[in-house]
Image (cartoon, rainbow, N blue to C red; front, side, top):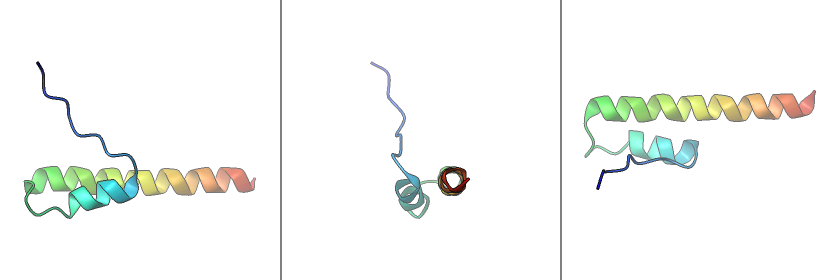
Amino acid sequence: MEDRPYIAADAAECKQRAENETLPADERLVWAQLAAAAELAAIRRLLAKRR
């Protein structure tokens, strides 16, 4: 059986993982980047609705 990677549901969950000090620094950096990308995607969606 293969291990499945953890998948966050939203930006807040990604941010929570990025702040988890028990994870390795490089993994935390990836989670922080994913949190920022998710926030930007949410902003893009809101702007698209306003058009």
